[in-house]
Length: 396
Ligand SMILES: *Cc1c(COP(=O)(O)O)cnc(C)c1O
Image 1 (tube, protein in one colour):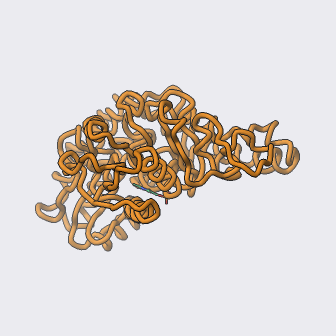
Image 2 (cartoon, protein in one colour):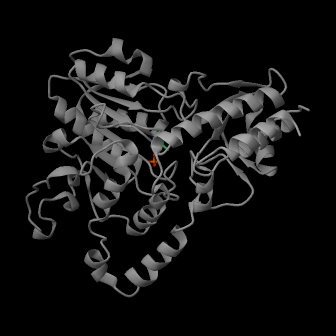
């Protein structure tokens, strides 16, 4: 057997998280796209069937109370909280990430006050964040400036209202320095809004520890909530009284069934709610989150780094020199949980990888993305993916 194969065997044998793979329904495909759509947790199909047949079909309207439907957004938020380093009572689940970015950024600008006239946005951001930031700037009468995360400290000033940043760059897998950037934003008196889509469930975030103001994230990537699963919104406890939602729907009213003409916000994280929650998706997410029972996010991070290190090592061994160039930073403190390889004919290469049972994804114009989800990806998967990539790109 070749050296990488032997090494993969050893690493898998020593991997304490390896048994967690049984908490998912998987086949023998090497699935490296969990940073786009997480795999299906084994407990979800039966839970969804119960929610549909019994809770909806039999209990019907009673389920809003008896099945805990009404309180699901904050209950499931509390289930996500420890995964992102937040104490209970600061996260609600609901709506899409895009909608939550809108809520968070408008609320951030309102908190910052009238004299703060500029919003900063991550220039390398996932497009939806940039589109929404632009709309928020127009709606609130602020200017918007796109800067890279590295340029943020120099761009901050007494005019800065809010800064919207991605924790991990969706394309390159670069991890940005959340503690120091948040501290810099605070030193300028501005509000820090973080998008955790590519970090939550893959690495420790430390929202409370680092004093993050507002954060949003999706649940269908590393949190395996299912296609279109609802996103979440974090509002730091000390800011909740000042969180003035631009979408103050009846679900965030202090007395939602009082049916009053005037709006009065509920206390706490509940202010982030809007309208009737998407119960079927939300309860699928709740079942999906059970895979985290007893799992340490630090252990997940350690395995994620070992996987991406090993994958890069195997790529170097199998892929002919010069065929790919890694965009993913080498230092661990700058790396998320994916490897992005620039490659001349990336779209075609990914098609052929998928045909051979290695599923990653392609991001235009020339990037192959491989997401490593430590709960169900092992070292033999990393070795096989790199070996097939080498074959596809004309290696040995
Ligand atoms: C995946 C992702 C989104 C997705 O937003 P949706 O509203 O769920 O479509 C937003 N921002 C970032 C950074 C993402 O990675």
